[in-house]
Amino acid sequence: MKTIWHIFKEALINILNNFGRAWWVEILTQNPRCTYYFGPFLSSFDAKWASIGYVEDLEIEGAQGIIVNVKQCKPTALTIAEDLGERIDRKVKPAFSGQI
Image (tube, rainbow, N blue to C red; front, top):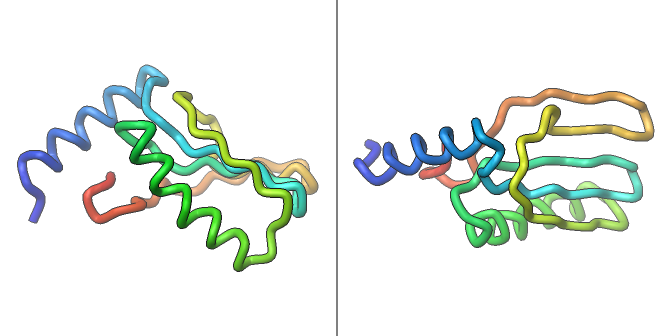
């Protein structure tokens, strides 16, 4: 069951994201050459904290040359596979149970 705080937080994240002011984790990998976006988040702290798990997952999958950026943006695609020259749209998945 969602609390009033979770409902408010989701609404605020949606508003910020619509204006490109929500926080996102951008992860670039050299091998494979991909750019991944994870989010949106309410704060840079939340995004940085979540990025730890994303990096661990990519390392387990064998990704190399991982660079992490946390920034306010509004990505048009959540995965860009540069080696294949394609943009892959995937649904935003919550990093935490309270995340949208």
